[in-house]
Image (cartoon, rainbow, N blue to C red; front, side, top):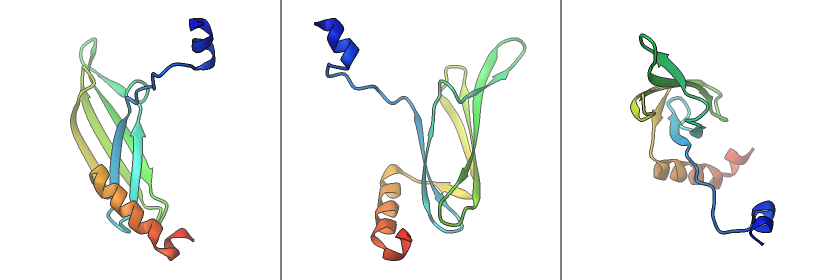
Amino acid sequence: MGFLKKLFGGGEQTPQDRGIHLYIKCQRCGAPVHVRIDPQNELAAEYGDSEAEGYQVVKEITDDRCFRRMRAELHFDARRRETSRELEGGDFITVEEYETLRAERLAKPSANV
């Protein structure tokens, strides 16, 4: 029976999301944007003499309102722990701020056009 559960997806375990989630507000139009970074596949190694001393990721982000390009750059240590982040053209916000801005935008009839 264990084989059938594995084959057909039975069981109560849910996959854990190990992504890095960025919540951003465009400086021009105020549109909220959610970006997910996969730390296992999207980080680029920064090499020292012979081994990776850290990692970085650069994301070009465009919102769906004014289409202004924003640029996020995150740096990580050798154990893939975030050490710094920078954002051009937008502001980092919390998930709560993102949800509030998104709900306000969806509540406006003109925003759905």
